[in-house]
Image (cartoon, rainbow, N blue to C red; front, side, top):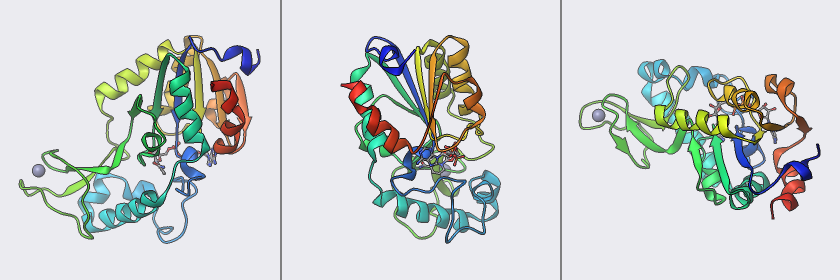
Length: 235
Ligand code: NAD
Ligand code: ZN
């Protein structure tokens, strides 16, 4: 089956994205991270243990990431995924990204599995806070430190968001998987759920991943470049 025959407006479409989709916007993926923070692995900073041990260090790292993300603009991959939302009658975007670029590109039907870097919450009482512009971590009135509202390694995902993601993947007829290493659970399971239920899976990545073994089509390359070439399929 070729893509043109497969892609039909009335098919249920799920798109799963990972940090590779934002790489062309200048936001480093975890595995590609270099520079200032190269002596730390993200797995050593994006954890509740790291924050408990050293709140200023983790806050500083997030400030650095917010600095990069704040300057970034969506790339063609984000824009074509936004066209896809308008094209398919039944569409959902499931993202592991916390950068908010999909929203900036116009997507509204989004499940942000790992939260959003611009939001914050109390580490103790979970009270929500908006953007905080401060070099040092602030405290909530309960005395707890305020942290970014993102899901850290070892933490569980929002139950309702996760349930919807699994349900939508189960119903999917077409599933696009872009720029994700397929190593971070439970997101990595979603394409398998879609496949079990008969979805046609298309993966776009620079390199093959554990998910590649079950996909119907693997398209090697940069997400932005590949999606730009597919744009005409979604008008
Ligand atoms: P990952 O860093 O583990 O893997 C990135 C994947 O993208 C790799 O498979 C790589 O080959 C691929 N890739 C890199 N550049 C690409 C490009 N231009 N086009 C297509 N593919 C490309 O990331 P992950 O699987 O998303 O998961 C790791 C965690 O990192 C997630 O929890 C996510 O929340 C977090 N994260 C998010 C951001 C962001 O919001 N932009 C950035 C870094 C990490
Ligand atoms: Zn609190």
